Image (tube, rainbow, N blue to C red; front, side, top):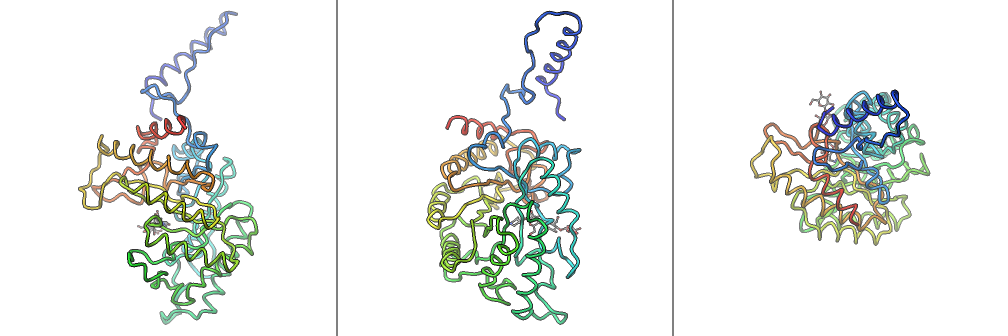
Length: 376
Ligand code: G3I
């Protein structure tokens, strides 16, 4: 734990109070400073309190982090009302070998959430990536038949969703099914996905039906990245409209939110307006904002004032927009807790994508976001 000046002062004040109480009847003024007062004098309002009138606030976690004996566990309990498994609920983690489920890590996360009064987002049930080969190929390496592929998908979804029926409140039922990087907007679905190749786009429909059968109460989401770009948001819109028109049970769209410091406000607003017209819930499921303007910018390993400035601009813009749409946004989840652990880091190039730093302390950008919310 970081011991700063104000914490030392608080400790001193507490000792003084205890000493005084035991030595006289004198009324002692409350000298305690809030536990979270930083050197700057700014009081930290935990994220889940800051946003409690608007949406749940979550983090993606590993099993090691979901432990109150660690700084990560304490930070989770303090700041977040929702968790998502970063990896351990994916198909290859839960059923790497056909018919043999491995529940221990996922169970541990769920238990941590229950113990600490948090929600769990389930990620994810159907994906072309991080899925075991047996879901797609036979022993000769050939794609499975449509019937077998669907039967196995149904078995997987039914088993997983049933197990966590009372514990997981929202599922990413299908992840990243739309074709990316197609500005002309010609190709709708990701045709290189084995799911698409075995079944066609209706694997999406089937996955939602299986999930709903297993848990009538869970919120069922389609989840994707780059969703705010015109070519992709229109595909997602068309696909979700098709599902709804066919009475397929879908409750919402997850925008992953792997955005940039120079992400366009107009793109986010236009996307939220478009998705609003589908009458679905929105969740921001994997928010992180790396400090670089582009992948060409040289990497750094130290957080500097330029990075801080960029993130202040980006995060305040983003949360301002998200608050404007809080009638349809029900959860905003960061894809990690603090800057010490993120899928974005590369050797010699740290991404620093969160509001909490590598020691899990609030960064200056945290206080800018806090101010923004308080001033609304
Ligand atoms: O499990 C193996 C382990 O057995 C092995 O020893 C180790 C050696 O590197 O690798 C482990 O697997 C890694 C896995 O994370 C678990 O740590 C994989 O190599 C690594 O590629 C994998 O990365 C994950 C990535 O999804 C895979 O696509 C990231 O942690 C995770 O943050 C990322 O999350 C995705 C979302 O699910 C979907 N949206 C995009 C997002 C970011 O890519």
